[in-house]
Image (cartoon, rainbow, N blue to C red; front, side, top):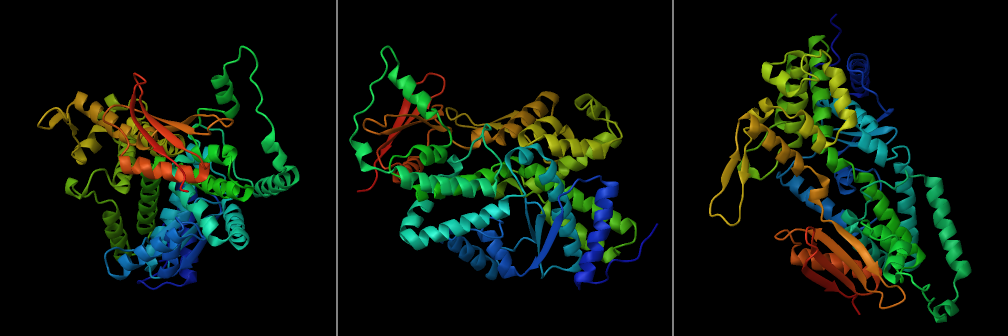
Length: 504
């Protein structure tokens, strides 16, 4: 049954937004079965959108010079016409916060409500990565705590001292996350209590005489190295966590700042692992909802043409000359659309490749299952079809450095499709995108040299400048010499060694 138009033309007011939201919500919950956090929608200016960009999409954060630098870069690029701003920004919080730009047309406001407040919202709430690693109800309060704490430290210890710790912590934040569990969701009251108890304990027990006590002697027959590593919990992949707990020179407030940086880094940890799925989900949801609004007469042809134009721009896949990799919106949306086709109108090829879902008649249930239980790597490995590979003209190149030419070793045949799918899925493996650097030993009662290992293979060593920069910041926080061995994973042979000492 047709319903009255939600709006006409490009102008909008808050009544328009409310009518659009209500209509979108009906489709999202009644027809698509989406499960959502409560929504909070805020309309902001382009300048405020630049501020949100600066803080990695968060509504507030502590002060740091890098945020100002990022603001100026985005602002200059936007003012000079080299780039545009996002139509929206959405925050994984409870309630889910969506920012809409006031410059958007009425149709774009409806589209981004469907995209952000319903598509991303459902994904954030239901995907297992976000459920395991984040606590949406606590993040905004924790950011307020972090901003207040850093500001208080600046007042008490000076901006330069705080900036020194923040610079080093930010530089190491990619190596400041737990990748294999062992974290607890954020809890503001617990964090505040723990910070207060840490400060009070330090003040109570500090006595310089402890420094003069002789080192304890190891038990007869014990393995000193093994005991030391066991007591320190080594090896440890989370460098910031180890520095916070074990650095011999950091003060209590410095440890707390390191903790703030690593907890925020941990909060963002799931996002790059599900970029294709998250954007694909939100784009598919907004396109389905806006199509239903048009089919039921709630938006006119002009508005729907604007939707098609906008979505087409978002899902455009540039050619190889624009760089490696796939547009996550394009690949994600194509895979979601293809899953619907396989479920509803499968071919003989689909039945061979996807016997569990081909022709099951439950496209929405299959999509919701996929959105909840996979990340990009496993989703591509499970659901990328030969049709999508043909549509994107995928093939695989073998780049053997010992040969003068490249070899196309996977084409559009059955074996080639499987090889391409494995290789593409592997490119989204988070374990391959970040160097495996771990703390492996330190003698706190001896020279205090911090020893690290990078497990790798010949030909895959760290860039020298990157290794030197990383160790420089590690030395700032550790306070003593740092030594990094790059070790062959297969043979344990040392391939390269890097060292750094703290300045002064």
